[in-house]
Every structure is written in C-alpha cells, then in structure tokens.
Length: 77
Image (cartoon, rainbow, N blue to C red; front, side, top):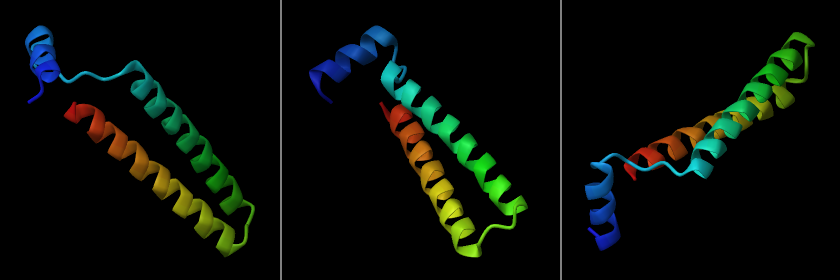
C-alpha cells in the first residue's frame, strides 16, 4: 500500500474515493445509454433492417459493459 493510499484510508475512514469526474462520466454514459435504448426501440418499431438493429444492440451492450467496468473500478479505489 502506498503512503498516499494509507493516508487516504486513515483520513476518510477507509471509504472508497470517487472522483467527481468519474461520477459525472458514469452519469453521462448512462444518459447516452438511455438515448441509445430509446433509439433502438424506435428503429425496431419502424421495422428497421436486421443488420442495423444488431449493430445498435451491440453498441448498447458495449456501453453497458463500459459503465459497469467504470462503476466497479470506482468502487475499488
């Protein structure tokens, strides 16, 4: 454990620190994910091409994965 990590744990009682920018980034990624999900549903209702729907779904899954990884990473701090 580094000296800075030891001091942070002592001062903040062992609580993980979440940088404000990380929290803002996660919030923005969730917002974008919501917009993608809405767009995906709109395309599906409009009868969009299967390839387009698959690309949208893959993009949405990737975004969810990134959000989850960032969330786990921020809790590890």
